[in-house]
Image 1 (cartoon, rainbow, N blue to C red):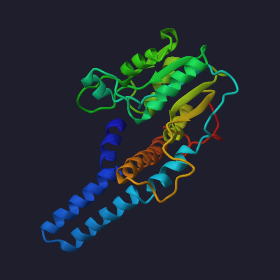
Image 2 (image 1 turned 60 degrees about the horizontal axis):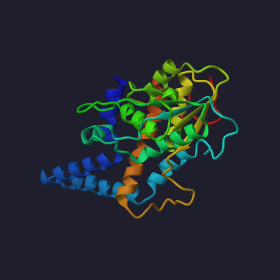
Image 3 (image 1 turned 90 degrees about the vertical axis):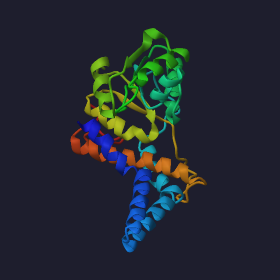
Length: 269
């Protein structure tokens, strides 16, 4: 129920959709003679479009998420295993086209394959199913497995979890499948903005020895709140930031994490 409810609610709370709905509502009201209220809603949509597209809202929203855990450039010791979270492949499009079509989060898989090459004794786990309501529900894991094998990961090292539909299920199903032991070290590879919620979920699931390995950064220390050149880029990043912050609050309220904003100083299981 939580899965379907969260998908439905965010359909309307997604900033880009919310702006369009405001504009649509304002236009309809003006057409029905409610000029003042309609004009107010239309003006609000314009202000939000400028702020989210060019005003740096995306930077203010994403930067704290991406910088919550330190970026790792070198590891002190070899890990027991590498966990790669889904969100790197457009599964429905890949199925329709008969080829592996990557998303902007493709660095998750690339980094996972590189870590597997760097640490040849480490286990490799990919976790990611299908999160679609209708249409082709082929799990992302089907295509991820094929790509990881093509990138040189040995079949004997690769473990695939294909039933999860969201981050919470990633943590629960992966823990049940792998059964990590105390004293082991596991790298959690996902987009930097997704690391806080992911770490919170996996810790709550009871995963010991977890080390955050953020990749796929969308902000830079050189960025400013003035935003970029393209409003579409700003809107996309604002949507990502909004989804994560809403997800953090919802997961904490639902008891899926032990901290509202999980960080590196939180206690491990």
